Image 1 (cartoon, helix red, strand yellow):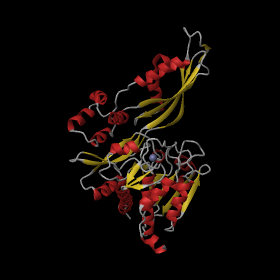
Image 2 (spheres, rainbow, N blue to C red; image 1 turned 135 degrees about the horizontal axis):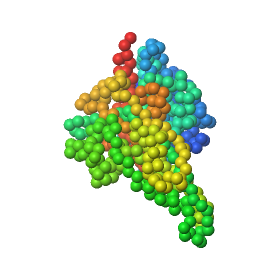
Image 3 (cartoon, rainbow, N blue to C red; image 1 turned 90 degrees about the horizontal axis):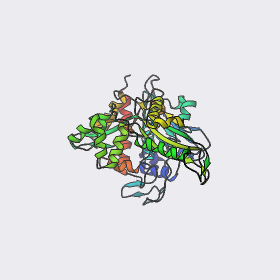
Image 4 (cartoon, rainbow, N blue to C red; image 1 turned 180 degrees about the vertical axis):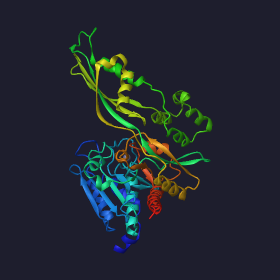
Length: 452
Ligand SMILES: [Zn+2]
């Protein structure tokens, strides 16, 4: 048995199934997630090849794992493969299969986390173990970082470890989630690499009024009525599109004809084109990619049916484009609220700036070669990621971080996007195989281009 585990490259399917079944659901509470279960599974898996791991526990059960293949040259760049081990909560209605069954059905592994991002975490672990098993001796350190709490802002994961144990995870280059999908046209196929993320600013707007009796509403200062107006102003607020540096390659990645692309690349015509676009899902995606957005998502206020409320709290999810900051968000909100701004007190609940990594790097070149090995005529397209990932934690500290991977060419990016935090999350076995190969190719290529 020993000989078998030491000579065969374990299939990522089995490992992914184990990670899904552990159901490390992160609902934002400190005691949720319990990523210790996936840390244990990965530790056991890597341990079969004698790989030593280090554990970091930011709160009880919130365990992250680090493994390292030490480089022979202390000044050579370190490369980290980072995968999160938590998953988002899931509502069983709308699912056709067991949410945490990890079932393999018709060549696809089903379950929460199958695309975000246990698929990548599992394939990273398989590739890392394969490197160690085959005696790979890199020049720079190669690190595998299986991290907790990505889905709720990283305070029990990457953020915490970066603050308290940067030495354990610090790397010049980082690969994580957000890319690897095919797009473009048959003549100009591309694979996406996420090189930037929008910033986030979660704001609470306290709308003030004056209390009174619900039997006499005339000429009162009702905070709820005012909050309704605030919501409508934010919903109607439409700052113009801004075509940032990644917009061009984002458009190139679309499977639409050249005329449609020309319109999308015209800042003056873009907003009208989005408004008229038949495919609302695509319009929503392209709008987010070209605008700072404001989404009113939580409202709380009022005490009793017969009491006019004097305070209503509104929570707004703001996502800012590269080049903007908290001050810019404040200006947007004032513009949106107009004369209502004076009656609203705004504070920030959670925020981080947009982050970007350059594309002219040695890691970029390695990714290009690794993709070309399987898809010869395919080019890389650098894209802006709408959500946030732990890449930002590394970019803030000067690392180059990309969201990458390599999926099967028949996996449509729209289908993939719908499974993200969505129903019927699943991944095909071919994509798991390709991505495993991709990590191996990138790590080996990256190292082979470091001069001795
Ligand atoms: Zn994720």
